Structure formats: structure tokens, C-alpha cells
Image 1 (cartoon, one colour):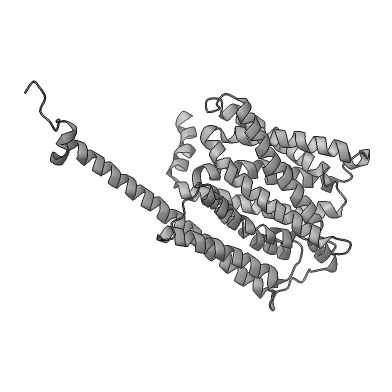
Image 2: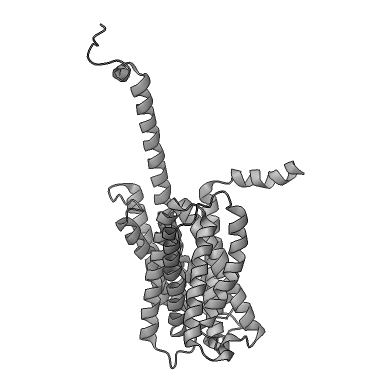
Length: 375
């Protein structure tokens, strides 16, 4: 039985590290893209913009804590006041302000626009990571040029999807005005300017969260525990805000089974699963690798809208999708070239050190330059 159980683990070990990272981020993007549409539906039904994220993160917390406790007993360092402050700040920036600004922005715009604005995250993350020296950017090397061009290409692709429609390429027979309104949201009585400001803030908070998790993980290497503590503080923050603002008891209640589904989907998929995947990939692949995949969301949201909600698919969507894929390829190529360069540099340094110790020209390490008094 032990050998049978160890077989899947051995097969997983045979999968290259980069393949695992790509698979994880692809799953992340599919789950999060669906959340755009589901959240828009929940807002159309009148759910509270403060109670919804509170319930969402309570569900995520209940899912994450058992895994963090059981899997990271040996890896979890002692909890200090300094770590508590860092977790509180991560929860405030990465979850409370991030989700709060997103839901207010989505309520005043649309899922397509919200997912498109998020494509500023790779560029902002890239700049923040470079300024904090978390991500090395060498514009004189191929890897640095590829990462910069890849980021710009992905953002350009998402912008094309948003700004250019072109002729209709695909029109579902089942398209209806009702589904069209459901996906785009009601444009009337919405403050588009406020929505844009909130979504820009959402991008800044998300980028900061991605970047700030990297140095914390170096000091506190228990990934799930970091996310769990951050989620706990976010729940406390949302609870305090909601208790102060939402005085109507009906706002705290579910009015339909669909509202229950949207909360559980956001809590399980968009929070618990996404938090765990994101911090794991940040630890293994770096913050830029995570943010480089975000432009894929615009493409996925457009596809989901076409298939599920009967949205028409335009030429601009196809061109934008191709640019996004090309941008991702360039970023991945740049990361691979950077890994090769780092490996080769480490091998050269290792060979040089061995030659210095063992080679004939390095005997000065073992023999004094000047004769001793004994001689």
C-alpha cells in the first residue's frame, strides 16, 4: 500500500517545476475569470458590497486554516509581534482594500472593463519589484528585454480587447438581450468615474500585495500560514467596517440559493484556492511570473461571456488574445533565460572556487607567501 501511495508522488516529482507553475497559474486564471461574471451577477441581485466579501473570506479562512495547521507544523516559525504587524498589513492591503475597491469598481462598471483594468497589474508589479530589487531587470541581456517586451505585449493585447471590437467573428444563436445586460451590468445610474478610480486602486493594492509577500516569505516560509493569518485579519477588518456601516439586518441574510452559490464560489475558488496558488507561485517563480498571467483573464472573460452568456465575439478579441499569448511566451522565455544564466553563473563560480583550492595556481591558499620563522 505504501508503494502504491508513493507512485503518484513520484510521478509529480518527475513533472518539471516550470510546468507545475504554468499549470497552477492557468487554473488560477480560469477560476478568477469566472469570478468576474459571478460577482457581477451577485451585485445585480443586490447583495451588500461589504457583507459579501466578509462571508467570502470567512469561507476562505475555514478552508485554509486546517491545511496550514496540519501541513506546516514543522515549517512554521514562532509568531512574533513583528510578524503579526506584517500579516495585518498584508491582510489590509492585499485582501480588505484589494477586494473592497474591486467590488465597488465592478459595481459601477462591467466585468469586461474590470478584468481589462487588471492588466495594469503586471506593469505595476514589474516596476515595484524592480524598484525593491526583488526582480532583477537587465536590459542589456536577452532575458531582461524579453520580460519587458512580454509585459508590454500582454498589456497591449488586453487593451486591444477592450478598445477595439472590429467585425463580428462569432455570434451565438442563443444570444439574448437579457444575458447581454447580465454580463455588462446596468450602465444606467452608475458612476463610471468612481468605478475607474476604484479599479485603479484595486490594481495598485493587488500589485503591492504580490510584491510584499515575497520578502515576508523569506522570513516566514510557511506559505499557507501567511495567507491564513492575512485572511484572519482581513475578516476582522471587514467585520468591523460592515458592523459599523451595515445596520440593516436584511443585508446580512441570503435571499436566494444563487447568492449562496456566489459566496461559496468566491470563497472557495476566488479566495482560498487563488490565495494558496498565488503565494505558492510567488515563492517559487517570483512576483513578476504571477502578474504576467493576469492579462489572460480578459481573454477568458470574453470567451466565457460568449459561451455562457451569449456575448458576440469580435475580431479585436482574437487579435488581443494572440497578443496576450505572445506576451506570456516572451515573459516565460525571459524567465527561462534568466534561470539558465543564473545556473551557468553558479557553475562557473563553483568551478573557479574548486580550481582556486585544488589547482596549482591556487596553492597560495594552502602555503604562506612569506617563509615562517621555523624555516
